[in-house]
Amino acid sequence: MKKIELDQTREFNPLGMQNTVVHDSEFFKIINFNITAGRIFPVHSHDLEGQVSILVIEGTGAFLGDNEATIPAKPGDLLVSDIREPHGVRADTDLRIVVTIAPPI
Image 1: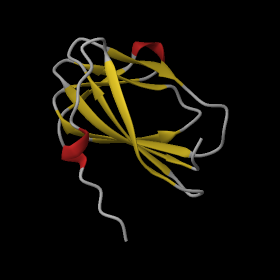
Image 2: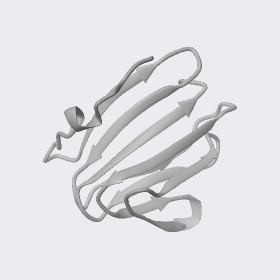
Image 3: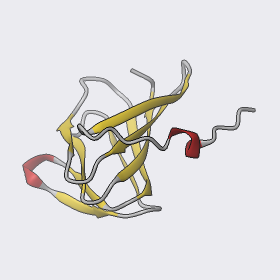
Image 4: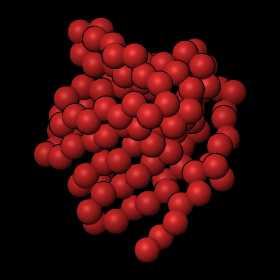
């Protein structure tokens, strides 16, 4: 077992986004992203088979998709999508998310 203390990764970059890989294995990767208020994690996709989850642990914003689709996001909200599906995040306040990618890229 491995315990990960996400409060140790609570650091914001005034220029936009801070990321920390908190787990990386052959099965999945977990990354903590801290996004400064007003910034966007751009909508993107990966040409791979697999899935991605995005869990909001602090702050508010929106999950972004293609065609300017937005879904409000607050602490405890979890987005799950195929990794080929366009996905991104907008931070309305300082926002912390935990992204899990399987298989890892």
